Image (cartoon, rainbow, N blue to C red):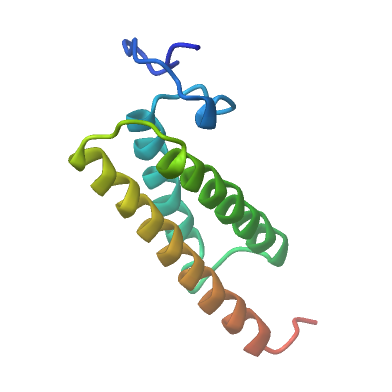
Length: 112
């Protein structure tokens, strides 16, 4: 197993997070930060349609990855389980914001 790439962290990276090269804790911190940034990005002045597609793919990929972390048999503390659930909530909230942004974009008249 590889060791987390976060500065100063020596915790092993579970197989479910191999591509991220982060331990569960640092992955969840990274994911939460990215979800928050993307929620701001989908605010009323919003992102482009191409960016909406990228964000939707981010949600899909990391939702799947997070489900593997949650169900792969890792022994997680109750606090870490709560953090995993919070990360799912962040992804779900991001998805809702994205859907609202896409609806706003469809409702706007085309620019000439």
